Length: 100
Image (cartoon, rainbow, N blue to C red):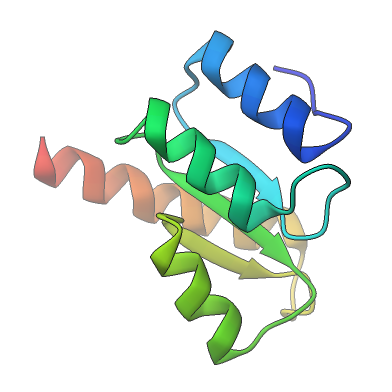
């Protein structure tokens, strides 16, 4: 599925596509990642949501948890961003298979 231009479009795409996983940025026009996640969670309560952010702190992680976000990935983490994302997605897949 292609990326969305803003948080509102991300919510619409998620509702239509019913993806296996959703990746959101924290700072998006329209709706930020937290608000988009809340709306997506209402329609897709079991779909893992990954949040990408430059802000790697406890407050962001707590708010992400309250919004139903499964994983927070800091864009400032050392290493290749795709490797970090791949690791997070593998962890989500393992959680899903053990719950399911």
